[in-house]
Amino acid sequence: MYQSGSVNGARNVLLSAVRSHGSALDYSLLGSIEFQQEHLAEAGKYLERALALDPGLPGTRLTLARLINLQGNTEGALALLLEAKKRRPDDPGVLYAVGALCLQMDLIKDANANLAKAVQLEPDNPQARYSLASARIADHDLPSAIQIYEGLLKADPANPQFSYALGTTYFLANQNDRAKTWLEKSVALAPEQVESYYYLGLIAQQESDVTKSIELFTTVVSRQPDHWRAHVALGMAYRSDGRLPDAKRELEKAVEADPASQKAHYQLGLVLTSLKETERARAELATASRLRAESDDKVKWELAPANSRKEN
Image (tube, rainbow, N blue to C red):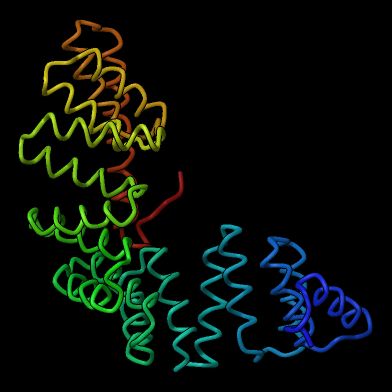
């Protein structure tokens, strides 16, 4: 009944059902529809009610986890997914959801374990394989990631995202010739893919081809003006080419796009020093030093034993 009519029609039917003491399935379906329509508060209410009526209802816990993750509650989402995994330990969809969220939370070991099992149980799922490759990269296992991406491209050679992913992984592995091949293929398949131009620009920069790198980074910032990393790279390229006013302009845009970028402030400070703008240069370099110190302090706190941590 719910599949034959429109979404709004199904929603109206389900609303009538829940007003008349509907079942857990009614609440779950209604919650899913509200979630698809981005009515998150209503969706959460119906999904929670569905779980209260039937804690084992398949799919409901996953949808609710996705919802509260979108709301920024990653720990709560993970708790829901781990409960779903406890109930369905060999469900590839559940394992994929757990692994993907662990990857988002930088729980790399758990991400790899769950995603690997999801792929083992459902080897033809490209989404799970793609996420597993990302987890392998996070674990510094580039050869495994390359192997996964190559397998994905064998099955879907015209997928620009797969070409981009393989190209960037070859770049990380310092295999620039292969990286260029796949990044250029990604551009050919999807010219709007700005990240491919960005990595091609980094390769040109490494190869000391300043003119080419400027061309590529300019393409990125013209299509995505808030791409602060490209503004930094373009500013550095202009600086190496002796075009200091242009370098200053791009690095100021980088700082505007991401005021917390230590690299952007540092590079801007160097350019301002060369331009004899001493006061501003000192201010930018001081900001870069402060951001660097804050970053170091955060890493030290995260690495400290739990019993040695103290809140200020």
